[in-house]
Image (tube, rainbow over all chains, first blue to last red; front, side, top):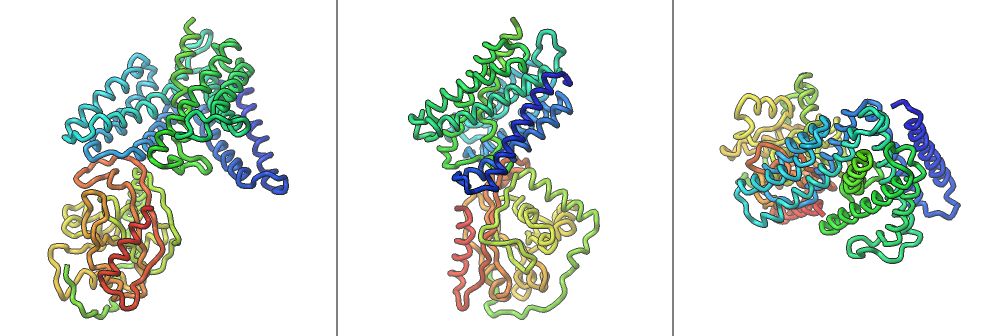
Length: 317
Length: 226
């Protein structure tokens, strides 16, 4: 992965973070600039979280494909923890949940690590679903049966299945490149960058020009203006960075950026709806300044599968 | 449970063993198990209007899972943990070599016989004798694990503890979600996230009736649930 494009991409991100950190520190030292100190503090906390995330990511990249898949699996595991913790379950779900956590989730990631697309693409949605239904039924508690099993399945699909497509990008065959090479890592990095950029842009556009919330009952800060602004900005960034993502032409990259932003928005809305229903704001308290793992990966969960399949489509031409 | 009404003098017998008297293996096992429990239960620890302290305390908590005592114990900072002994049921924890070793050597638990309570040797007196003037206790005033996860009525032991040693700080503790991680009757845990909240210390008010005190203590635990 020591090619010039990978280095350029990583250097660019490091530069961006460094500049942002410098600006954040400057603003914190000069509170007389007329900016809300609470907002500056939140910004700095978020940045610190970003440094931690980037360091972990860089370490995983450096250690190789399998490590990255394992890391992604751990993130899935933690996200699923947060998801199920917030979802009321009954005692009859206990055994099903045990196997979901300790058998189905790890096994799915083993299939991803061994690049068995034929199996991992159906394992959780098909066999995971059948298992959860049957195991909960056999536990003997039929109260609100479909509702309970649906909750566990939703958690599995969103937190584990969807997110694993990000890790699966490392095995996508790209013409003229060795599988698992720097090109694949750049593809994954490209996706993470777009998703996070889309998140930020959504926030910025909603803050600056947001007037009409998509669903005010679910989230008052997610607006149509934010969605459109973030999708356009992300498409632009993707087009500019097309050289980093191997199989895409600039116009294809722009399209991918647009779709990724829209899907990320959809993921954020979905998690907001769940959180709103449960009456909480954030999912956990792992990294300072970031709500929880699930709060960080919700957009990624929705964007990763689409990005994966678009890549397959283009790379397969 | 019935206890003699008249206060009994607390004999100043030294604690059975000094806090640091455990062997290195037991300490390592304790640390490992504490770390494992923290990892498995994803516990976040909150001190609400309260601070960890090495002064003599009785932590009283709701009881929903076998992991409760271990988790409270592991949530305490190391110096406090060394001084704190969980109170556990003898009929459960002295069965089998492993359980007995865990209870007696690793966690330095104080085992109470629930089935054979004598008037002249009440559990409260035993507890007070064992902790001497330095050690703290973890107790579950409900007496046994709740089936539904709701907070049950408190047994009177806590009141007699407070009455005989009015100087000890009583710290309410609320354990959230652990009954879903390892419910009663299950032996395989589901690794959800839990939360342990320590509340502000309380004492027995002068002349406070038993019923009022127990109700107040129960409310203090419940209040930590938010």
